[in-house]
Length: 88
Image 1 (cartoon, rainbow, N blue to C red):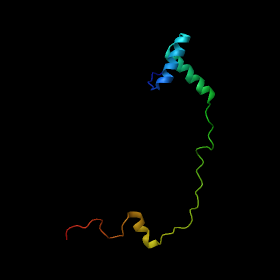
Image 2: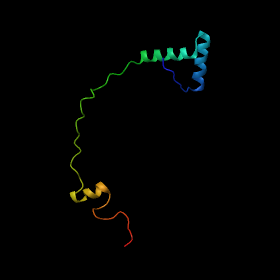
Image 3: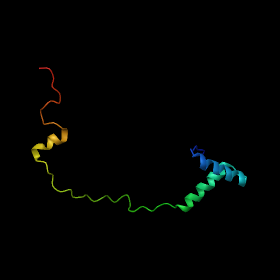
């Protein structure tokens, strides 16, 4: 069995304590039973597609920037131009 800590809002915590007291079981048992119920009600969701199938590439159309601007677009400044003005 795994020991863990959880945080609960005040109202659900008080209600869980009430259920535990009325049924004469521990709060831990109330939580365990609640988890067992939830995993039965919500079975695993089957995956839509196997992970081994790669996505097909989408066509985004032709590149709109002229070739001479590619370097500027890639590095943010034209080739050969310093980013800061240094002492001469």
